[in-house]
Length: 151
Image (cartoon, rainbow, N blue to C red; front, top):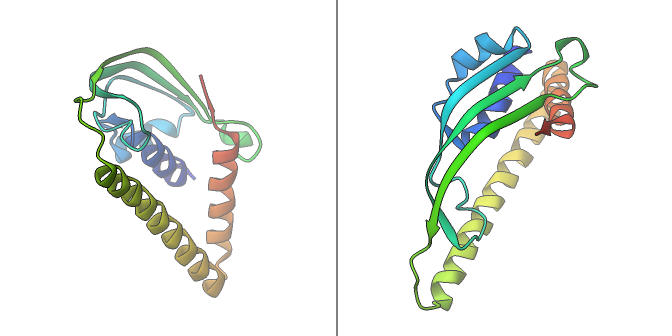
């Protein structure tokens, strides 16, 4: 279970912070409570949403993760963020370029489409294999996504 949970959290949090080590997280998470400190915020963390500023730098002072191993399918995984400091700056002012905006929208749509195709392919493979472990794993991940709480 700890591999599934650590992979899930690494994938989820890795989009936003640097320096997450999957192996270290896996070992630490087995105890149920993990506290990570001084994580660097990725500069590209907000690139997929259209905000009028860029992240210049940032630090997440403390990230506490609580995994309820005894109730993993019913109780939430809790992520508690504290001492979040982010330095932002305006995006470079540019004249509105319809072509550039269309290309950016197209790239975002293509990325989403590739992700959906990959998920669809994985589901097809699961259905052909009929592996009970994969079914349980996918149910576990779906339940973790549904139950995750961030403070």
